[in-house]
Length: 349
Ligand SMILES: [Zn+2]
Image (cartoon, rainbow, N blue to C red; front, side, top):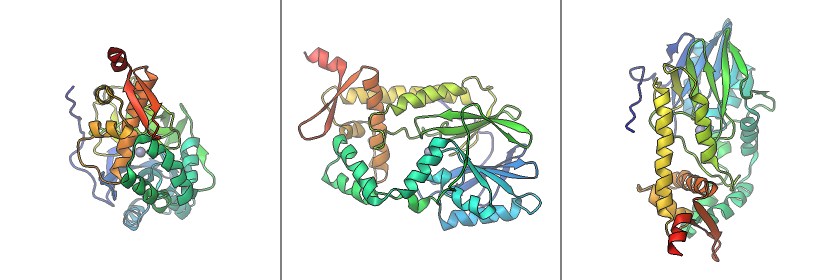
């Protein structure tokens, strides 16, 4: 299905600028030092103060952006009151600890996302590499790729400020009152652990985080931390949680631009993964490694950072095929998993 996002605004705010996109809801855009070069953040008027949703990665450039925004919006009469973070990825939680400490305010997250942030911060190079090595070996990484596992290690703590030792937990269906309006928490899985989206029925506004993006699909990766998970199923199931929202909901995504045709986007994302599942299945007609599936799904050249996203994504699709009874996995004598389509095995027999 050809999907065209129904973008609502022209352009985007420059770093350090803000733009009101719904009454009391302001859009900020910050640079990111990755291939995906920006993130959208939100500040919400909250009675006698402000609430922030998501924070950007920790670096001097983004701290300077926040300092500009602080001067413009956060005054002694109307200070920052609270920081909400959708999930533990560095572009979202990176400056949460810094902002909370600077303003003496509290952090709100789901329990799983806060715990994951704290855990990742204190992970050492040794513990991280020890966790990753067997996972990528079984996926079929060659000697050179295994070297990049060793150098990747514990980068998280470099781009995420230490989050507060206490926080406020939100759970599914909780309502966060902001400026007299209820924002309902919608928890999604598959991209992160318990990613929080926020929906305000009064404003018909959805802060979708990374769960629903208008142009790209969020990374759905099998991770060394939970090597037997089926994250793609969790992600697809989570999409159904948005199907009862009004068709004219304004969606505020963490990347690209605010848009309006949500329901079509949900269908398009589900179709995208169906196509990727078909491609993954075709790649394992003959016994194939995770890296073989990666090479079939990603034709473009991948750098040392992107290859980790790509292998996680390839394995996420193969794991759904296994859970659906369409593929099997065996551990070969060389310690690498081989996947094979079930139908292919039957026809070969
Ligand atoms: Zn994310």
